[in-house]
Image (tube, rainbow, N blue to C red; front, side, top):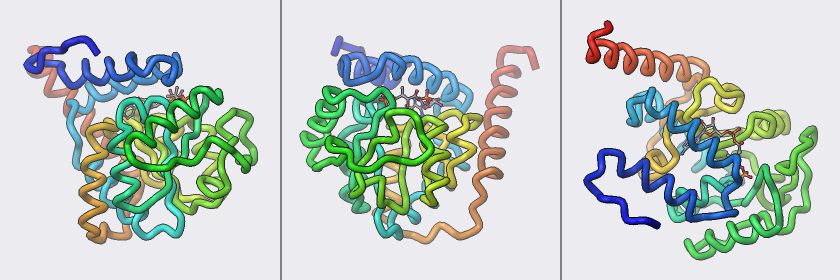
Length: 244
Ligand code: PTJ
């Protein structure tokens, strides 16, 4: 990783980019594009965890802790950006982690699994023995002992088709996605609209606290509140630049 000065105003963002680049082919080419889209939405959130994201984090923590078989589905971007935090979350819940890729190759799966082993957990995903019905992409290939039998699945940086397929299979889906307009965000039962590396430590804290989050969470309404936050950020920007 090139030396990034810690006082650079965009330090965190530059570190994230370097991590994705340093992962080489373990991150899909399309993963870099997906990251850029995420960054654009993060600007609209003021690059901060919002109130609605905190609500979703608390509900997600409760769902994961109360699940019969919680599973964290991890892809190239999520492991390159946050492998150790994913491992820490899995241990805290406790949950299994499954490497599940859209752009699947055995080299990528085993390389990403090795990164998770370095982070201290034994992941699933290298020997798929279950097929998610109704899904044409390679993401359909998964493990019965993981996503196949899971009742709650946490999916950071998801593609909308698989989110829908998991919901159709009767699973509770928690998404982490900076884009509140995405199909994933709108299909999941609980969507944390926040940056992955920013919200994982908060999710770990919420899991460890084990505080009931309340049963009246409505994902659609919560997404509406996120969009309202974006509107406020834009309005404040306009005012600051004298265009308001
Ligand atoms: O590793 P693979 O082969 O499984 O491929 C992974 C990618 C990311 C290429 C694949 O899942 C994909 O194409 O995803 P999408 O459909 O582009 O969706 C990614 C979503 O994640 C977008 O809505 C982005 O806004 C969002 N996103 C990107 N970076 C982050 C993020 N959300 C939270 N934190 C981020 N760091």
